[in-house]
Image: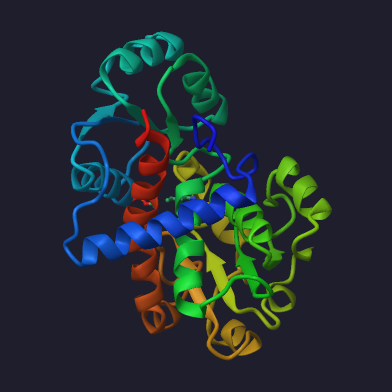
Length: 305
Ligand code: CP
Ligand code: NVA
């Protein structure tokens, strides 16, 4: 593994497999109360420029279960919020801590932090990608379906950070990917360039949810307005009308089709309450797997340091 985990675009397929296998191992150790083979006393700085429930709790619990300690830093309460440069923050935290997790807006901030830190940096969500989320999703699909290769994954809704990671992660794992987004809300160009040239799975982009959902084994969706886009909520509600995961969409998918939603969900918008509740087991397994996959990432990045 490289020093940092900044996005799935740069993560080799073999590293994805290594993370998934390590997550399965750590999950099984934790369920059987077995001690993890990991040096104690490691510290994780967790920088949040955006809100979080799952990412904060799963990283903090995760480092604790590995015998270490998490340190929460909100932008507002730290000197970052008063303009201290990322490069200086990186060099300071590298003197105290063993790893940094950061959730922020621009991917370039995460890249800059990694460049100036001598310790590993993990992307806990940017406007560009949400790699930890999608690794947890892929772990959940593998658990439920027993395999990844040859499955069809479908995205319906906004071509956002989670969509970007989902497209790359699923294709790298040998899944076919179909994406339905309205024009103007498509995934990032770099992601589409990767997807169109991928050799491990087929990729399809459409503006018709009913085409994307045909024969799907797993359907993903997410909110129509992400963090930082709150002022566009009304405009987006209009643009995404017809992009709801509902019974009609599910009827087009394969029998046993799973749902993955990173949460929080806006039920009645991107997904009906009925479909959400019918698939609650998979969706909350997905939330749980954030813990196991992030422990695996920290384990692999810090174990030999
Ligand atoms: N899915 C996810 O990242 O949730 P939080 O925003 O609660 O961390
Ligand atoms: N796309 C959402 C994901 C939240 C976990 C956002 O960025 O707000």
